[in-house]
Image (cartoon, rainbow, N blue to C red; front, side, top):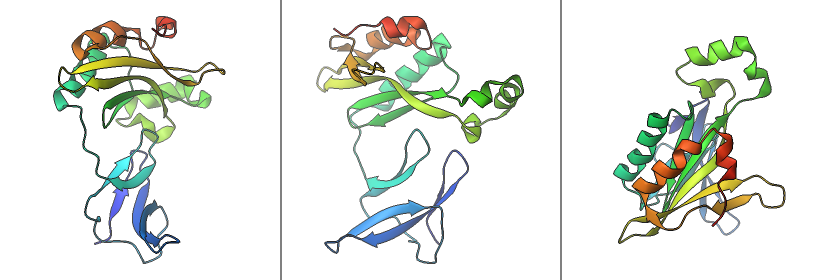
Length: 189
């Protein structure tokens, strides 16, 4: 059976194999079908959907972040009720928190009511932008550093806002600032 994947926006993607200039296999997803789709995922690969619903086939990446650490961030977000729609993307030694940004036309009252009724609001135009991330810097002691994305034209990059510390302390210190003006006052160390 052909490998197909439906992203969170409801788009169906089909897996294909191509050939590079050096005659090596390359894999990609497309919304078009042409009869040459793959029927198995190649060994050592996995399907990955990024926060803005783009679909890729990538080599399996072992995560250095535990499920308990990921749950710690999610629990703190829910406890503070600081955002309604978010994605926590875990890759290698990073947990990156993306928050939903909607298109201006969806801010109208009629669309707000529709958004609240949907189980998957990303189906009608929510895009996600990186806001904060936690980087595992010491695997033995499980120390992390907090970073926030700086959108100043001269920077447009991650800035470190903490010293290495246990994740439990960092999430309590920084998650409550999400969605507030105080978030942008978190200064680099």
